[in-house]
Image (cartoon, rainbow, N blue to C red):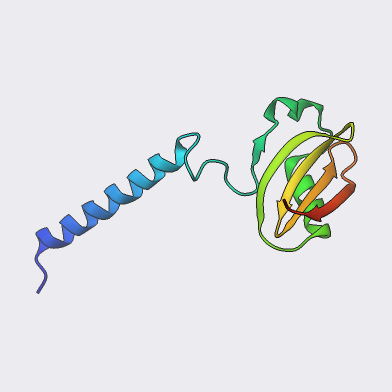
Length: 107
């Protein structure tokens, strides 16, 4: 029979491991910074975008398949775009209209 102390010790170790992992992920610059599907770069340009981040990701997923990774808001060819990494594609979505402008292979 497993002792009560052994069970409590294992539970405490699990809680500490989860807390440590959560703390690690919250530090900017860590390997886990920039969660998939969230805006990574260009947060200062967000007030200039007419469409939402969710709308940009949805539009990008119509042009490429696979997991959504990094999303940036940037100027591309003079147009403000959400640059959404979807699978192996780098999808540019017009931040004003939601139109997919380009879906090139990711660099």
